[in-house]
Image (cartoon, rainbow, N blue to C red; front, side, top):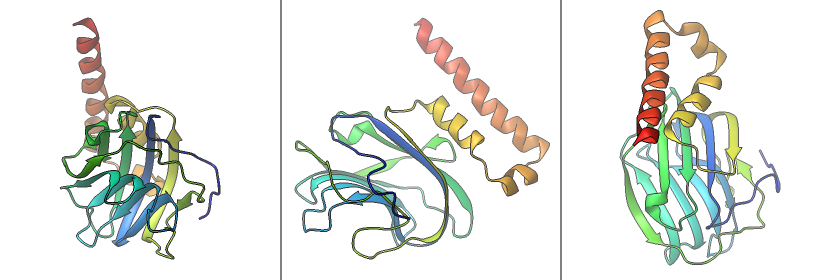
Length: 193
């Protein structure tokens, strides 16, 4: 899906993206990347090993941030994926969430000092090299700030696919409410300190 210039990204501007992903085979979840050798822009892709990789690049392999999850997507299962970025131009400013939980990521590149602005179209499920995601994508949300942990959980809960809502047990609902409540309590505690 080509969203043209719906969203822009820059290395010194915070942002968050979230969506539901149904993984079947590796490929780009979303991208806004120039198709030249530099591959300037932002991409979120899945690897053959089912990891999620986020790249912000001025020039790939030279002037870029790139992180790769140690957690893997499950084939044929909907997973909520969110990415937050604080605008710091550092890999530690990038966080990937799966189902509302920040997952451990390995830093692949951590040297970004130039613009990542790309005039390429913002593509959902596609990349600039005729590469396409195989699976399902739903409910893309973008924000011009880095969401906190609680906001990521709220975004996930609000965007639960209908079939998942219908199949939630009372225990599942209680667990989601518990996550939301514990995150609220954590925020209140941190705010007081």
